[in-house]
Image 1 (spheres, rainbow, N blue to C red):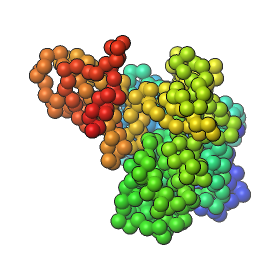
Image 2 (image 1 turned 90 degrees about the vertical axis):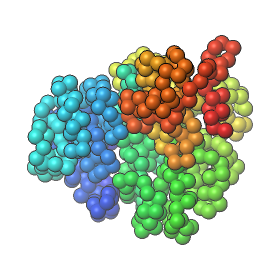
Image 3 (image 1 turned 90 degrees about the horizontal axis):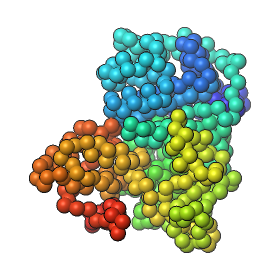
Image 4 (image 1 turned 45 degrees about the vertical axis):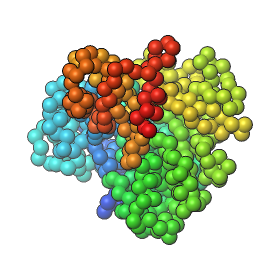
Amino acid sequence: MNIGALFTRHARYRPNRLAFAFEEQRLTWDELNRSINRLANALSDLGVQKGDKVATILPNSSELFETYWAVAKIGAVVVPFSTMLLEQAMKSLLQDSDTVLLITNSGFVPSINAIRAELPAIADDRYLLTDSSDTPGYQDYHALKSAAADSEPVGIAIEPEDPFNIMYSSGTTGLPKGIIHTHSVRAWYGATFAASYRMTPESITMHAGAIVFNGAFVDLMPTVYVGATYILLGQFDPVSYIDTIEREKVTHVIMVPAQIIALLKAPNFSVKSLESLEMILSLGAPLHKEHKDELNKRLPGRFYELYGLTEGFVTVLDKMDYDAKPDSVGVPPPFFDMRIVDATGNDLPAGEVGEICGRGPVLMPGYYKRPDLTAEAIQDGWLHSGDMGYVDEDGFLYLVDRKKDMIISGGVNVYPRDIEEVIARHPAVQEVAVFGLPHPKWGETPVAAVILQEPGSISAEALRDWINANVSAKFQRVQDVFLKEDFPRNVAGKTLKRVMRSEYSA
């Protein structure tokens, strides 16, 4: 089993059908497969072997898209990083992932040069640039690819449980979590979501989010699985997004709530321009019911909602179930199981709130080099989500709260502890609590409540600026700092973030 073999298959049986489009580039399955083969062979020519880690720091592009599948064909492991990473986080993740080759563009050269001496696993000839041929110390991605053969790589045996990618959960503390997905896991992504979305080889998928995040595979894998058309956008702009749907007759899209809201408010929104859509799937954060209702009123019979964890459990609310279960996030797909458990691991009856646990064929084998964290997350074969919810009498899942207080901003998972550990280093800070507040564009944004060692020793604005200069990634920057004399706490002394969240959301 090799995920890259899907492209070989479609090139043989659907050679002249449109496979991929990005900006002005449009490739049939035959053209796309040959292009992927060239890159796969170029990487092999550089000495990349089965199991080697190939990292990317790239925005949405054809180069990023093709790297996933070229790496798969030769049995290496792709490690896609966010372009929002700052230097120290970049160094930490490249080291932690054991990366041996890096593909990026000239915009990241200054940052990479600053840390390059601390990346001994990457040989000097294994830094590739996708947009430059004359940068000292870097190889030309396109020149290497053009010089390679377009034939299928041979002699590489891939087993279903061989790793395909490592997705890092955040970016990051000194203890990053690299989530491993195998070829089998990604194959199940394809089969599971293609069935869930009623996707066919004639479907046309469009994606505007960054494909370095795991949420992108929720529509990417089923599209590739059935051999449909995948249209990748460089970024989300609601006006051009609608225009592209109308022009290309797009059938399937996934969007985070902020994008759905922007779509509904776009000046060129019309039922006619979006009539080709068969699916609008919301994921990444809760979509408020008022927006769900407006979407279903204007574009009925298209809304799906997905709840899931990169570690390997999902539920899907089908478009045919929305009217009866509008507040639910659906049910597990076939071959998945779900439990709601109490603090001691006992199953809870319908209607009672507990931790959501799940298992199924997309469950990760573990966190990269972190058996300790893997053992915490997966117990007796069940993934413990850290999210709280309940099921109704029909087995439909309802989310209640995030036990781990994770913030989802613009579809990106932001972990408060990562930010709190940075803030705690400031000498003026005695105690800190980071939580998310509603934001009209991003869904949620991080804020920090702080108790100072000495009242008046630093202003909220100055502390906010210091925090934002020291976090690892842009999405970890806080919008506000609230200085407090004390935090609300329960009888055990635990800080009640939900109380502060309610206070500042009012």
